[in-house]
Length: 266
Image (tube, rainbow, N blue to C red; front, side, top):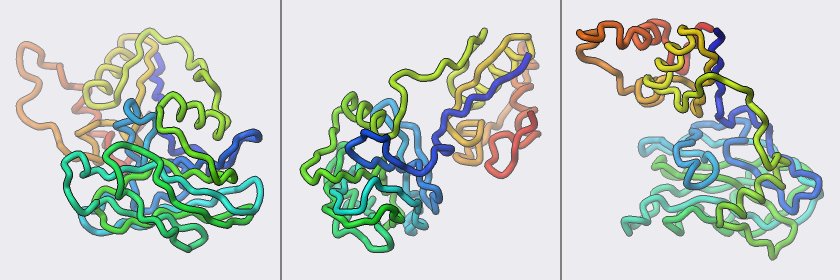
């Protein structure tokens, strides 16, 4: 039976454009056409409602993420950026995740990622734009700057919600998303997570004749064993009493599954 891979990442979303009746222009960070050196991180979606971009430069500022945004009309917009100071829970000084937002090559006055331990909308002031503008995230430190979204509002008094249900409603309206997910079909088994355990379980079930859906939110399979994390499995395997226990894993490794530069065979 066919093994169906359902990749739930947001890499395929097009550059932001507002729904017809949306009061704002919402640019989700994962919508940037060119991520530069920023990485999409989905591991906290259950807590914050969305993936975000992470500037993981090991102390060296990463390349700018860039995209082009269409606006419903030229004029002045209030800017809000959803971010956080990731060291604030420990009351550590310095706000190492600092970054700037550039509009048509000019940085806004605000330095982002400096204010709160919680995810929140940081005030970016106002900016004048035409019907189209180039937006960039400019990392200042290389130490894990975080950006979830950039919001532009023609209503200069508009305040973006931080409450997750209200934020989800705003996202649906601004991006034209349905209130309920599309029907993904019926399966004998649905496996959540494309790490070694999930991938091996899905392949084994498919080989036994089940119709399987494997849900994965990363660009590659393998979890910690992928080229994203590079914590390789090792040690004694295929030992009694389950000598065939990790056969699927060995086959995946031989095919290069889990590497960003290699596409797995169907």
